[in-house]
Length: 391
Image (cartoon, rainbow, N blue to C red; front, side, top):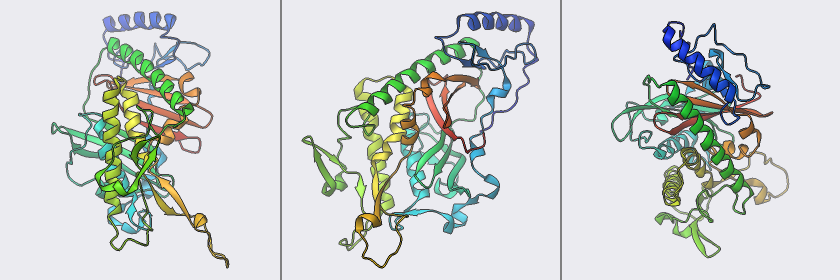
């Protein structure tokens, strides 16, 4: 979703003087020592107030429209992409051909969207999700500006890019298509809030990463405890706590009637997201960033048996352990796990546009962007750019 170029020269002298005053004050005192990028687009002067990025200036505010380049779709080759519904042979199938990536993407969008009543996916405006997915030559599958209705019958949009190799989310965004005007004060408060919740999020992830159970549970000492009624045969016991495996085996030879594994996968993802949201509410947490990434990463507990793509034929008898592997619905867990790098919190920079603040963090491996809506106090999505991407 590239951000348009804005003509910001036609502003009143009164607003310009006010902005210059605010700029000088904020640039001097900083904002909690955090680098802030291009905050107030409604009243800056591109010629007079443009400030070059400099990592040596602590707490500086960068006023450059160049900083607002945000084009997640640049990581896919759109010119050579094909609509999967029109060419089913290009879809990627998993688990003995029992479910494809389009079904997985459909499930992730619908179930992750419950993090917000405004974002919640109720029904498509026209074509469904699976009919709107494209396959790019580099193994990425995507859906762009897919229109749908939420529970209030408001028109919303969603973007999603997934890596078909590890089933990780490269980019996801739930948004409306409205133009909103926010004051410079609201933007500054929003940046302060965003900085605060990102620090809490980093602390949460770091704690889970160092805990015994890792990052498979967000709000309790044990993995999700809700037991799906249809999976009683797959219940495991750990620490006297019953919980579902969220695992299925499409290669099971002893089943006369194979279940609908795409439906089972969707059911597991739904259970995981619903239970995570319930645990979030019960925990007393009040951090929209933690909620968004908890819901968007928890599908990683859903896993299934898969043929090992690295296995090859020999004259010897196969070792079953080498023939098969376990694949999980990685979703945003890869993104979250990379946030334990201290660069995530040390290198924050912010840019604001149309009531949204874009937080950028960079490391030697990638660049991450997280989108925060000032008006709704919600995270709308994120994008992961790796060094071999064009950005």
